[in-house]
Amino acid sequence: QVRLVESGGGLVQAGGSLRLSCAASGNIFSINAMGWYRQAPAKQRELVATITGGGTTNYADSVKGRFTISRDNAKNTVYLQMNSLKPEDTAVYYCNAEITPKYSSFSNFWGQGTQVTVSS
Image 1 (cartoon, helix red, strand yellow):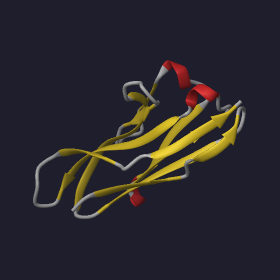
Image 2 (cartoon, rainbow, N blue to C red):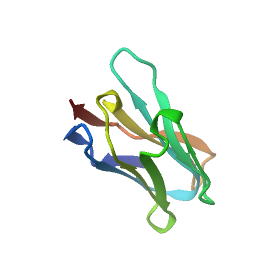
Image 3 (cartoon, rainbow, N blue to C red):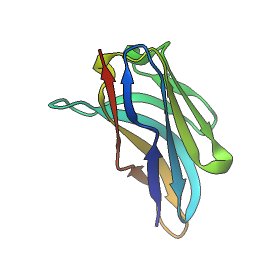
């Protein structure tokens, strides 16, 4: 069984920084793209950043220049370094990964979410 477990969320003042981590575990054969999404109250879930297995990154315009996504393939872990945080970054952040489990077919997996709150 495959699991994604996020950590690193919390409360921070505007202008501060946080680093999110998401580790994939279980019977994993391979991992393709990994990424972070977020959902603020009364809003739809939106893409924050993605990274392919080869390291190609993609960012939402709202976070370009402030957030950096990276991954450690040996640890099956993706990170999101968030700098210069703004109150509008407040949301639940979800990890996503395209995983082919052992003995099963390719699927899209989600973490349970971690709350990020930025105070003004």
